[in-house]
Image (cartoon, rainbow, N blue to C red; front, side):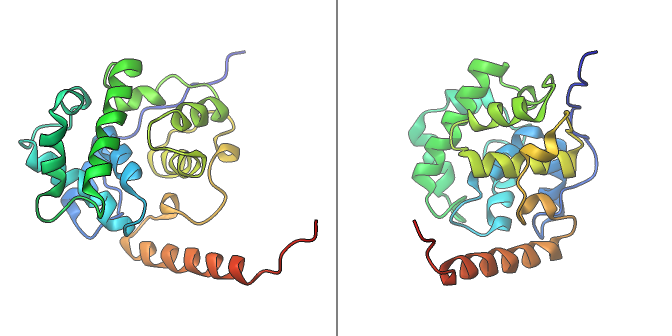
Length: 201
């Protein structure tokens, strides 16, 4: 008997990762938006990263985010979009390059559709492998994104829970207030790790 494939994310509602209602609705309605937010979620506050797709959409003319169009942009022009005030990231130059590389990967492998990454997967391992292969997604980030897809957007192929991150992350955020709670938990975990005695070899 074939394993059930992952479902496509809902196209209504919101992901409450930022204090901006429009940005939150975009994250739930456009798969590329939430993927880009996840890409940018490093070395900046989570809400900054997940607000960036809405600003990018506005600066690119307000239409749906288009991986093909972004992949085809002049790299300097895209970097200028990232650097415009307010900047889309603390490191706008490198993140513009990563965004363009991610979009080029989606065009080459999934017809430019971010949701193509998960639409037809049959297992959590397959989903994780596809996300790990995305430019800018290492294994920890990929596991968080698998958790986000499963917990927030209903993408739940067989075994997704095992593939997902098993530590506090943006995937556990159901209200914006939870962003602050998750941040404190992550700080506490890092502090505990630093204070832990070294293991004997």
